[in-house]
Length: 482
Image 1 (tube, one colour):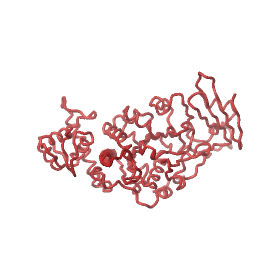
Image 2 (spheres, helix red, strand yellow):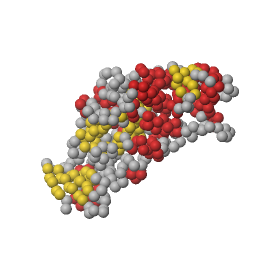
Image 3 (cartoon, one colour):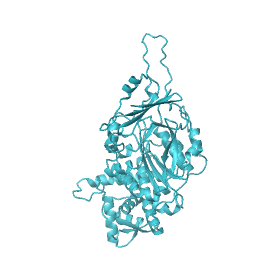
Image 4 (cartoon, rainbow, N blue to C red):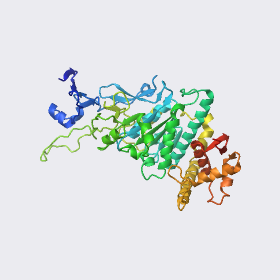
């Protein structure tokens, strides 16, 4: 028998099915049985097995959310920030760092258009700045998702090419920190001691990782590699996407396993997403989530002959409502803080800029600048970055041309990367270490298509990251002796 408790006009029902059964519910049928016309007043949580808790409110408890306070934005001793409120008013927390293990966080944010991803991203970036985290942010809507992030993050990329360069740099920095920490005898990351926590975030990640995307293979590899090597050296990775399941995010089993162990946030989703969440392992089998409607305004039947019916009723949207699937209460509905102005503005939002504050954003430690490479050095120079992006496009164009009629040419990550093979040959013929400029001279004399220095640097970085070449000094490379 259910136990009924009423407190301050809030009713809570504890429900249980017999042993051997798993509880399921239909929200519409439940509201009909309870004679409740507005389903947004009802919140259902399950334990994935036999029990459910039904909370009935006088009105929707998440209809109005305040902006965050500065204390909400600061990490607590467990490495968490407060991102909003659960339906019962308790704070909803998300981890930015795990001080128990010294691990950076891997995160995934899902949501349909208009669900609140961009505002959540703005808040996370502002929290990272306040906590002196170095933020690398790839905004694949050309910079439109979070324009206020410009000058408030260490690195902002606004194209797929720039995002690839950013990911390459992140993997290189992870390798450099790994070697440096190993020499120090450290097996975990110590927050700001002395290096800053580094967060690499790709917004609209499905554009980079979906089938048919021009850089999908390499992007998948780099995200996977960064998730594998970055965690213990203070480099976190986050993907924010509209994808309905992880097959649209690179199709990698390793990537899937990596992300489902991290912080997973589900904003309003498409009707087919629940099945994919269970299939991808992001939601345990048996768990059931209450759908998030597009608005909190209940449907009211009105006669078409009612002359007083108002077609312009105010609509309360559900932007920011979500489930924190990796939290202690994955089926507890929550809502993120209100971020920024309610009405659209013609320019930058002053409320969002205020969240970031006036301090300079944290940057990468100088010890890792060389590993981060030319792309990091050019991050604030639009002309230099554009040149590097063009070099990347040329690199891929060369790969595509060399693939025609190449027969049994070596393949890397699903692409015939002939430039990398030419670089390996140049290093092998030298029998000694070479600078990138010297490699360029050798490669351009091998009878193949002429390439530019940026393409050679990118190829050397990839070979070093994969273990096929080794960095033996400042701008010096050799074949890996192993």
